[in-house]
Length: 416
Image 1 (cartoon, rainbow, N blue to C red):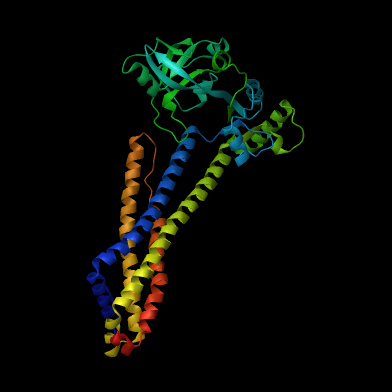
Image 2 (tube, rainbow, N blue to C red):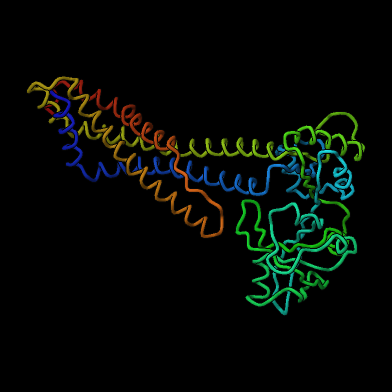
């Protein structure tokens, strides 16, 4: 029997059992669309984070606190931070020493805090960002109204504030904020500027930040003398790794850390390239995990195909016996049932790809509507993987029932 006739018989059999075929296809659709959505969302999230780093610049070295005797990227360090372990050894004076290194142009230090920010009865839980005055020169953020605070205001512990665009809107609405005063905790601060809107970010929403002079936040609100991180701008980016090593040795000397044991460091020095490499590793691991989870649903769908095909063989025993009695070979019967299984999975793959692309686009629309720099990416790998997986499912899970059908004795089949 020709391949065309076998294919026609297979499709006719699927049409006769529309509900069964639909349910089988639906199981495959879920798994295939999950693969497409997971890979697209993973690429979109990766693009979001990378675009933020690229906009910020790659010629920076970040120095941040770390729990001693842990690795910077380890779970122990993360758990320690979450449990409230505070490292107080990183100081503004460290930044001043770092700026004296030959390849460092400038730097800024920063610390984060929280406090109630209020204006004429409007209260808002504000995220306070205390930084050096040099922040505005090194960061891509720009002031939309008014100005940023000066070095003199930072040195004099001036009670001045620059509001993010979102928190300004919450407190003042469409009215002017520059020149007015807000209350942060128990202290009054003069609003000297409003930052331009930046949109949502992968790490935190800058539009809801209140920017304060570093020394003011440290001494008048938080009562501390340390910083959370330092960002240093390098002149020659090709020497960033060597400069990072210099910073490490400098801080070990300043913090009285002897030897070269990284676990004893109470700080971590990271170049932007190292940060990008770490992100690639993290996103790769997350994507593989999510694909594995989606693969489980595909396997479940494959088991469903096998069960459906077994039921089909049992219900069509008489038909199989009749076809074999009029000359159909074992190969014809085998190919017929294999074609049915592959046709079901292929149809599920096509629908799954279309639905996956649709949902990925909806995620993109939702993310961009929230101001996120999300990218709509459908990788050819995800489409090839989905199609290949679906055909493999049909062959693997359809083979045994098809083989069983082809081996039925025609006399016994007709008797049943």
